[in-house]
Length: 632
Image (cartoon, rainbow, N blue to C red; front, side, top):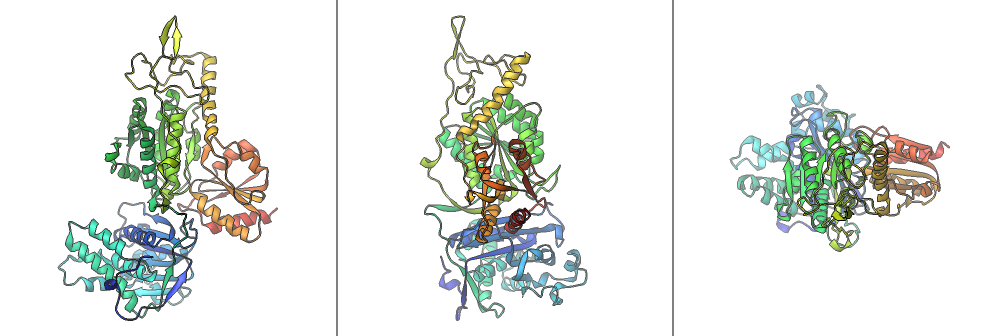
């Protein structure tokens, strides 16, 4: 692990260091307190320390909620360790609360005996009232926080004192207090300062006064930990034993963008990305716009319908057409997606799910769109549905969604969610040669002879995949029509014939089912047979597998499977189900996958539902597994 340079350390004798296997820290404060920046920089330092990690950024829904209110609290939770880390942590070991509202909102997340570091200067009568404490200061009441270690740090006062001779505006000075908190937290967990310092130098390269002020306060916070009598020791989490390879910390949104670029490079197709801004999918447009050097074309449409229309046009033109949205936008794109199903054009629609219905919870996570992805179009309009399971897995799920779309000439919906898109983890960068082959073939010659003359029929199908040929516009002799009216088999002419409609409907459905040819055998985590099988999809994977491991250590025979392909379902699921007695399906909704499973397998699946805008805790699933086992 990298250690701070000698000149960055406090003078005198270093305090003792206590080893830890893992720890969870939560930074919380107003949106203007820079908690996301603070958390991301602590994460960067943790990555440099070679720990495994998982993060949970938690944003307020309001763009700028009134300062000091509970609904304006922004948080960033990080779980890191020398062991395998798969969730952002059930309970917090250290809460850094920048004001009373942050303390009130997050106190229940701190474990008993855990530590709370508060900005003492923010606990004014005005802020206590805004947070709902009234005149009762929790710091002055020994019974409120008696089960925690509380450190009252004058962050605001010491930041102002450190920068008093620099001639900066008071607002600018106060915005630096998060760097004091970051420096102190870095010291407490033996994190290196250098990554944050380098980031500050780059971020404020054109504002040297602000750059130097933030670096100075960061070091002051680090030194304060060594010199104050409040902290008698600090902690160290040793490097994790990760599989050999080249790693980087990656957020889900970054991994999706990289997956799209990898698909573009491997296929030789130009990437066209179209979207209308919508939380939490907007980050994808920001990410992809940075990769113009790879020939990425990004287009911000005037609305969701225009975005899907542009993507259809890009796919018709022979490009890798992609668009992204969240639940409300997916509803608006429904007619366009149905058109793409009828035209049988390859494209990927990414849905970064959030809480609903309607505007719902724009910045909170939920698995609320699975049934919409499956059935949210008029008529019989099936398409493949793929779900990513971790921030790093977003890369592979995205790449596979692009590959399936082109191989089978169909739109594909890729499901992610806000927790995955904003969360991060260490990601082993794959070798290009390890990615699945991505062949692309455009039709260049007629495929039928009619009346003794060569002709091109747009709905002549590949015998293996049932895909129709893809033609770049302007290819001589391959002129053809596409549109939203039902097509005649092979010719593509408009047809109202009842039997033809039945045939084409069945062919489109069978084409989606043939995607099972590309689904790898389903892996079972834990026991491959036994009492309880936990079935999940999407971002619940980490919590499910941690819960299964905990229950197995208690002597239960439990396993889990996690679905990447939700439509079509893997062919081997039925054989796996036969080896277990009971089935638990945790979902961040009212029960959507469980409806698909009950319909397909007619088994007594038990739901575990949570709709609170927050991911599952492993302990919640652990309790449900034990309860299901003991109830029968």
